[in-house]
Image (cartoon, rainbow, N blue to C red; front, side, top):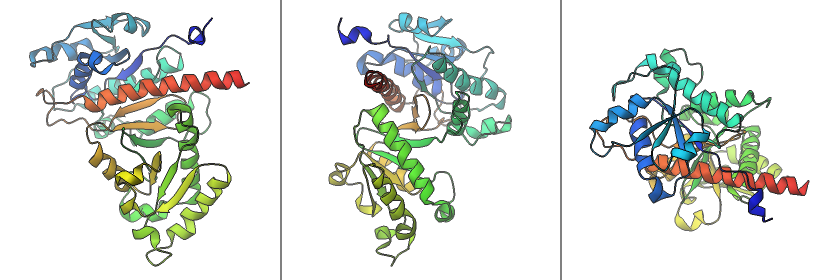
Amino acid sequence: MSSSQFQKPALPIALTMGDPAGIGPEITALAWKQRQHHGLSPFFVLSRKSLFSKLASLDGFKIPLATISSPAQATEVFSNALPILELPQEVVAMAGKPDPSNADMIIFSISQAVDLVKKGEAASVVTNPINKHVLYEAGFEFPGHTEYLAKLAEQWGKQAVRPVMMLASKQLRTVPLTIHIPLSKVAEHLTGALIKETARIISNDLIRYFGLKSPRISVAGLNPHAGENGAMGTAEMDIIEPAISTLKAEGINISGPHPADTLFHAAARKTYDVVIGMYHDQALIPIKTLSFDEGVNTTLGLPFVRTSPDHGTAYDIAGKGLARPTSLIEALKLASEMSRQSQIFDNATERAE
């Protein structure tokens, strides 16, 4: 019997609804339309059929729809229709007009997708864009998708789940060490413990989900010229360098701190697999410059695969037929590949034991 006969059958990807007033329904429909061209694995969307029926009035958005009762049916119907696992309540949305009354179903779509992966009925979670402020008005207690997913992950039996946001494209992978805080607060949030914890998660997950044997992690400095031996700041000497030394002693393939202004040109990108930036823009500006439409938001540190388009709800163009599905397509492709690599890793680990 060949080794391929031992492979588990591929499960479909669970795609969340996102904010129904945004471009989520449009990019979902377009991704399904382009499934063959991009070789997409089967996916289903946790949403309402009515949202996609409304799109039929837009030029090029009329597609066949199939309501499914279980994820298993998605694989059967995917080649002929967009599989929709309907949410338990109707969703009424006007394009470009966010409505807090839809918050419960937006949130339920996320939790249900995670639950289906936990039950072994879906391979991974891909999330359509949400508007956090809409959810806040309905009492949502989390800063965003990532933190909510981490809370759901803790229900899997993991006592501490520390999610790490990684932006990925074919040209670059970057991780912001600190994320949505003012630039003036970055230095006080920068600690050796944060660097070490983040780097360990990155290294472990690039091995498991990306098939890299010894991921090369490059760390940017906080200050210009990476501090220039203390002349332009001492965070590099006091915090970053000691953390890197500890990680190297653990066997992690890591280097730095490097001056950020010379870290992202073509030749430099060949020397690493991922960059840790000290703050949001230091990590996100390079990848959005190189791969604005193709970038994917990937959450590391979770017990399941989660990817997302690297853009928001785009209310200003919702319902106008202008949305491009490129980032969602790349998110679906990456989720499929990460799930495949995870299965390879798990199978190899089982054989080694």
